[in-house]
Image (cartoon, rainbow, N blue to C red; front, side, top):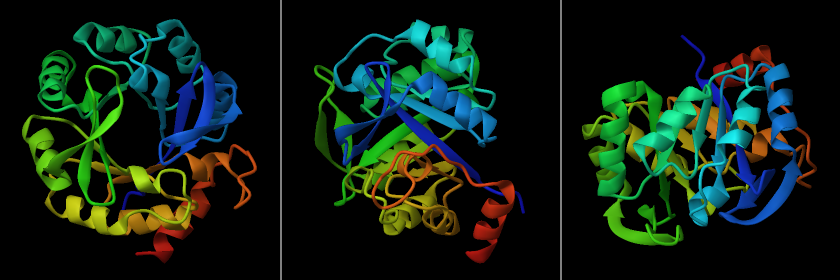
Length: 255
């Protein structure tokens, strides 16, 4: 059996790497370019970079800075944040980004997703679905980037996305973000049972054991910010990534 992907997530705000808790209170982690270099040296499966300022504050793409990060990424590199048009996505592909990540914002996301997929293929797109503990999808407001709750079940939204041709879905529980106490296994199981496209579980992991549990529950891959940037419960910053042997042993223990 092929080992699933374990993916570090690096959040960026004002050209700094940060980590949030429940999408709030960003903690400084370090320089994003240097952090990417360290992840590259550790041989990570993939890297996800999300610019939270570009999303929440409606800031434009910082292509020159993203390009500097991409130069240090010797692994598959996905980027999200501030992608609002086809031209935005095209500029990212031109600097070497393999996959763009779109935040769920209803029909406008589906329209942009279809436009990108028509030229670059569905494998070049992920859609990130942020969910609250009540399994309601959290949508990014088009005007100011703030989060609002929709009266729609996560499963319904995932169904719409996969029916429209997304190559991958990133599923994240906002309330679990940065807590490091374990992932929302109930939500992951519910969504993965009916998903026909790969689902990347994100939010809540504090260890590779937590991530392995998500894989056993149906996730195709697991992503985490905290587990790969903090050393212990005291949240001491230490960029880390387990060896292939450690990942295989952990995954084997849970299967």
